[in-house]
Length: 71
Image (cartoon, rainbow, N blue to C red):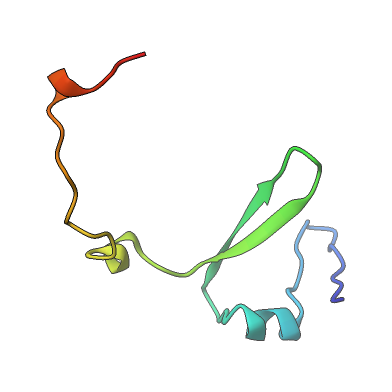
């Protein structure tokens, strides 16, 4: 388990072993998400939206709006 201390300015240094496992480098960003049970999840935000282009199959059956069941 890796630990980090919070400075008086509210900053932390992500331990080296975590940076390596998450492939984090200088200027990379991380996102913190607080879950309802109190757990905090940290994930790397090192992919741009444009890098996702083409990652979803375009073979989608299109359904006209009039045919959709609205609840």
